[in-house]
Structures are given as structure tokens and as C-alpha cells.
Image (cartoon, rainbow, N blue to C red; front, side, top):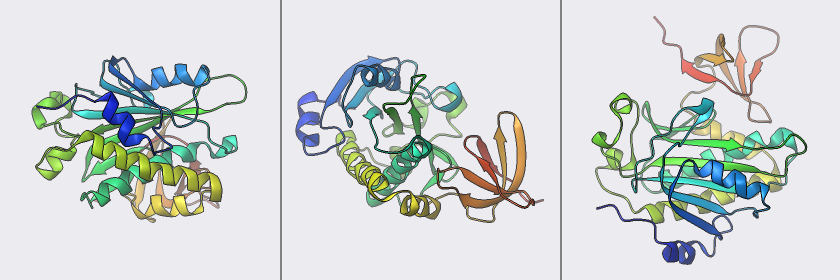
Length: 266
């Protein structure tokens, strides 16, 4: 039996956290990011947390569906108002990826890896995804950071099409997990990464992301961005979190978005 979120326990356990000190918990939402975007526009303060037991239209990048069965995962979005210039806002999602990976490694999953720009993997299977979004035609007043983490799913809980590509904490460890305990650890670690980014800039964050990245510098990659496919060697990350690809030219090519794949040698 997978217990539901308990609003009183959430408020009690997260009261000391800057991220999650205000919690809005729902039985079902189409998307926690959509709800958080509404709250962002209404003036919700930095660090407010939207949680749902299930999402009926959960999504990842490129409007892909994020499977969100009831009471099995963490489907959460945070309202954020970072004190950063606009060009550095993409680093917020990298900070939360690094923080999430660090919390899971501390909990015993030492093999968790990061795949640029927003996926957490165990081996070659997706464990979690992060989606940062903002609205507005003028100057941005903030953004929303969504996290989908597969926690207590077993194989039969995933759609057939995902059973070879997705995993969960339970499948990886052979045991069930307390969702509140892992959520608390994630918010604490992500809060530290978020605060350090704002206080000290991107240097250490980029180093930590590369340290846990599933591909190392010099790896042969293929990047598909806006239906333009390029191949080259991974040359690190730029100051705004962009992926740098050495394609043999005078300067590395920078990608701010795209699908990345290892190129297997024949």
C-alpha cells in the first residue's frame, strides 16, 4: 500500500526548509507546472511547492508525456524567483539536477548519473526529469521548476512502451521508499545548490554537473537540436549551462537545447 501525501506531515517536515516552507498539495492535477505557473503570475513567493498525487497530463521537454500514476512518484513544482541575470536562468535546472543526484547518492544510489540538460539516469534508464518553464513577453519575474521522480513503481506500473527505458528507486534498490523522506532530502540539497548558484555564480555548479555527467569530455556525441543533427566531441559546458560540442572547427558549437546521444564506435 502506497500512502498518500499528508498535508500536516508535509508542513511539519518542511517547515525549516526555504524550499517547500509553503506547500500546496492536490489529489490530482493535469500538471504541477501549469498550477505553479498560475501561482507565479499571481505573486506566489520564491520557494512555494506544488505537489500532486497524480498528474493526468504530466509533461517533460518537447511536450513529451511524463507518466504519473497515483501515489507512486514525486510530482512536484517549485515557484522560483532567482536573483540571476536572464542569461543564467538555464542554470537553475542544472542546479536542481545536481542537487537531486546528490541527495539520491547520499541515500545509497551511487550510480545515479546526469544527462544534459535535464535527465537523471540509472544505467541507461530514466529515473527522473526536470523541466524549467516561464511565461511572459516582457522581463521575467521568475520561473517554475518541475521535478518528476519515479519512486515506488514496479515494472507493471509503467506503460508497456516505457518498460525498457524507465526505472524507479524501488526497481533499482529492491525496496519501497518513503516519499516524504526523499522529498525532504531533495529540497534540502537542491536548496543548497540554488542558493550557491545565486551567491557564487556557476563555476562550482558546472564542475559538479560534469563530474556526475553520463558522458565525459571527449566523448563522441550526436546532438539533435531543432531537427539539425551535429556530431562531435563533448567539450564541456558553457557559463550559461549550454553544451559545447567540438565539431572540428575553430570554436566549439554551443547548444542551449537538444537531444544528446552517444555515438557508438563501429
